[in-house]
Image 1 (cartoon, rainbow, N blue to C red):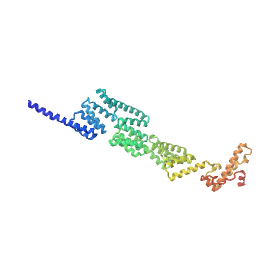
Image 2: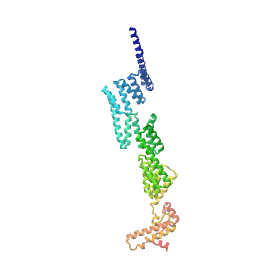
Image 3: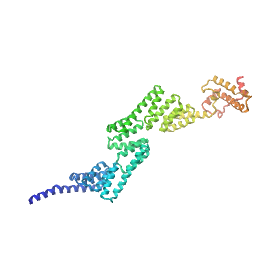
Image 4: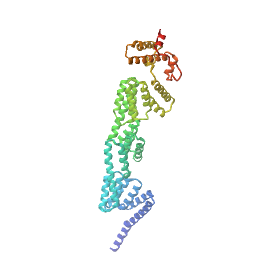
Length: 468
């Protein structure tokens, strides 16, 4: 019996005590590396300790702390949960589990862990502070949800930035922030956030959706559809990716049909198709700017110039850098003789792209503006700018007779004065437009008086001198 007891004691020492001592040695080495901030080596030694004694709560707790320092919160959460399963009174285990939950964005679960700590140690100041942090995150989540519905995307971004200070590993918060950045037109920032998530998890459907959304809003619709399809492969029920994919395909089809109708000269159909495309997605600013400009071009072809101007104005409201829309609107302003507005648009274009072509367009508009501020001799005579010499003479005779002072001798002094003024203007107009050199200078916008050209007599005697 004595010999049997000795054998059992030796077995216990060999089978239990020695592995425990070895595990403690691994733990101490892990602690030393942790103190030196060499977390990878610390992780290796804590893992050896766990492999040696897999039922020790503190080993899992230490490895959880190391994983947290490495930013591997999901793995750390598993270790922290295992530590409190082995020992429900392990305060630091509950604290670490709560911290992991909070870092991953699960503030409700984090709150339960911190409350458990306070049940075990009601004076634990760390748990008290962390509980407040979890409440703060929950509050930011609620505000962001309401503001997203209101389409106040800037405020959502603000709330997510604040929440991420407490939950740096929360993909859900990052995705919501990235989506709002995309909706605000801050595509590079949104792409950066989504790409960071995809580097860690290439199958993340939300991140794939945001990447597609950025491409979609930058008018790279074909590439966007590929990302939406990939997101739907990962998550077939992803509602946002499904809607975006459907909108992208519809927008692409309508725009292409509109372009085809325009090229075929079917402007009425092109107008209808561009209008239908504009109703698909009001959030797609770049594509809609192009659609407005395209429809403006259609309206200009249909000679609906004011509507064309309105369309181009909507285009530049959506995209202030859209040169093509400024050029189209400027031409419409020229065609409707709104020269000041045309000059303003051409100046904007030339400041952005200093090309010879844009410089010439600006110069032409400035000349027309200058001409518009002088007397319009063509209008005074009632002829077109391309009128022939004979047409100018006939118009002069007609207008001179119409406003001749003798014809209004019986009228009031006020009427006589007005008719005499018009009669002189008719004579002045004929003097310029009947002389090829003067007419050429007038048409080119030169100041005739500054050039020393005689404007000619325009009294009643001049009329009878020229026409007997």
